Structure formats: C-alpha cells, structure tokens
Amino acid sequence: MKIQGDLKQRKTVMALEKRFTQFVESPTVSGTGEATDATVPRGLPKIETRTMSFFYGTKQALHDINLQIQDRSVTALIGPSGCGKSTYLRSLNRMNDIIEGTRVTGEVLLDGEDIYASEVDVVSLRKRVGMVFQKSTPFPKSIFDNIAFGPRIAGLTKKTELQHIVERCLKQAAIWNEVKDRLKESAMALSGGQQQRLCIARALATNPEVLLMDEPASALDPASTARIEDLIFELKQNYTIVIVTHNMQQAARISEKTAFFCMGRLVEIGRTKQIFTNPIQKETEDYITGRFG
Image (cartoon, rainbow, N blue to C red; front, side, top):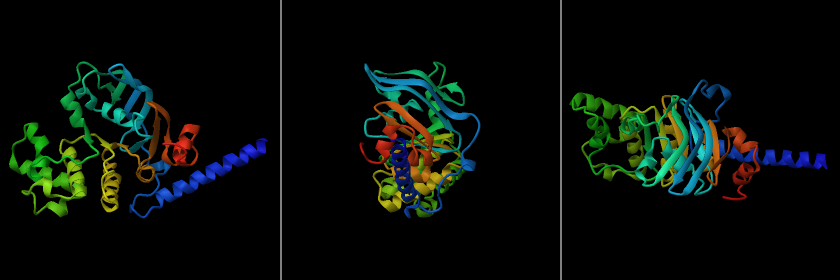
C-alpha cells in the first residue's frame, strides 16, 4: 500500500512539473525564464502581514494572514474568484479605506512600520506604494499631463523637471518610443496595452518603492500581455512588485514566489516552482491541476 501511495505521489509531482515546464517555456514572453535561488532577494521583508484579518462590515473577508514579501522581487497572488487576494492587495496601501465600514486587525508592516498606525499619512503611504488596476484608467488629459499629474500634486512646477520625470517614467514603462512625438495628444487615443503601460508610468512618477498590480493584463491581447510581463521582469530590478493574477502561466513566468489564497485564507506560499510542481497542501494541488476554481 505504501509503495502504491509513493508511486501515486511521484506521478502527481511529474504531472505538475510538466505543467510548470509548459508555463515557463511559453513563447509569449521573451527573456524572463525561471527564477533561481540566487535571484531571490535576501534580508528583511519589504512588506509583512502578521495575523492580519479584514472585514467588510460584519463579513470577514481575510483570516489571520501571515505573509512576507521580499524587496525587489515579484510575488504572485493566485486563487479562485472571491478568495480575498484583491482585498489583500488593496490592504497594502490602504485602498480599502475608501469603502465604508471596512476594518483591519493584526499588522501590515512596510519596512517594519505598521501602515495602519494612527500617525501614518495615507497620502505619503500611497506615494511609496503605487497601484495599477485591472482596467487601464488614463485621465482624460494629454499623455504628458497624465504622467506629470502626481508630481504636480506634490508641488513640482518646474517645466524642465517635469519633462525629465515624464521621459524617465515613459522609458521605464517601455512606451517612450511609441509616444515621444505625441505627448500633447490625449491619452484616451492610445490602445489598451499602451494605456496600461501609461498607467504604470504614471504610478512610477511618484517614485514608489512598491508596485501593486491587480490583474494588469487580464483585458489585454497576447502581444500586449507579453509587453506587460517583460516590463514587470525589468521593473523588479528596482521595485517590489505584488501582482494578483488568475493566469497561472503568468504567475509561473514572472514571479519568484507565489501565494495561494482560498476562502479568505492564505493556504500556502513558496517559491513559484515549488508551488507549481510540488505543493504542500492538497488544496493548492487541486487548484493548480484544475480540479476546482
């Protein structure tokens, strides 16, 4: 009986390894590849949640989440719809504060400091922790004014400095060459993929340390998705990135670590290869192999 059980386990692992190989060898993205131990940052976590729970009124959406996110890395949050991963993401820069009746218990730490402490300035927090949403949301302004919006709100008015910021951020978002001669044109005239990269550039304009991405490529075509994924791979050299995705291939391609959420609980977190090839929890295995979700 034990031999049969071991054989079944080996077959499951082999099937998961094959699935992961298909993910990372997908031709959709170039130049990314599988993360190795050497590429995963060491040291203190950039973000940490300790027994963190979240409530919409009387409804508890997250239960005792303990999770560490390392600096200058990509962490993917996966799980079925309604599992709490987007709620968790929005908790990391207090975006849920705008929803009446919500509350958080436990700790959410950024560089070891609780972002829900009474003395924390939320505007300053959101400059440090930027966010890119599922649907691209360019302002009905020019391309230039979209990027310059945040610095202007912060009090920057010098034209040469604004021009430098706009150019730098558009280059970081890999869209400069496509729009450099159109900066005075409306951002609304850009394609969907260009709009999303513009929104990423706009988030970078406030010099954040962390980028939160809520399914940033879910509404895009494969070519635009590839550009976004390549961009994420480049940005992690300088930023801590946390991304919610329903696309497990995407999680496998771009992240060093993957966290699996289910029914408001963190079921498992680990190196992405381990999560996709040899998960510890059966719930994770069932989700990865498509048995539910």
